[in-house]
Length: 223
Image (cartoon, rainbow, N blue to C red; front, side, top):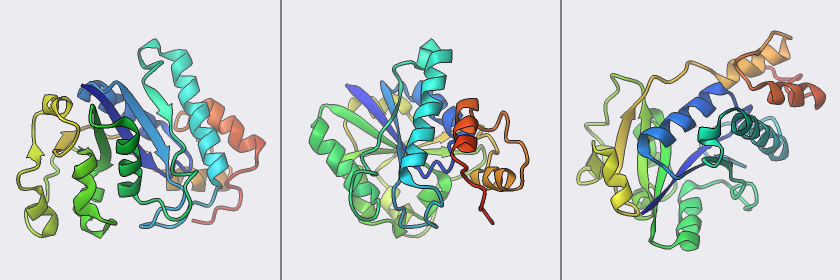
């Protein structure tokens, strides 16, 4: 069964932490493709200060640069703009339903999120339906644990697995926690550095840095 990963975020801007996590998840899970998907209007956080068009352009530049440097990921990472093309808030359950309608039941979908998102999953729109359309893969730092009490813990019962290979045997329905050494890179700190004239070299791909400077982005960032 073909396996496809979905890794969402504002990518404001995209940085090496995003890219490295996407690559590691794809390799560890054996995904055929990893779709990096910018959110247009995320419902659970402050709205991005840079337009969707700029964020998508930066993401494409970053992925294209990685493809030119590393043949192993040439066909594996893709920028997916479907949430930017949809009106209204960017609800993940609607994105997964759209993908499932397009792909049918012969593709395993893996929604990749962080442990902070899993802990707060009960605040998401129609959150209990997410595994109707996809598996959920939680990228967690070593030492993190799944919730043991509350609505998410109850929902996890019967869905949790510690076997990555099982994800490719069915299109949806399971939750896997994948312990990873996540890079401590912060988009907020990158925006602050850019606003104050400090270097972000080696934190952001060179092509993205050039794009930021060419378009005068993040100069008015105050956070």
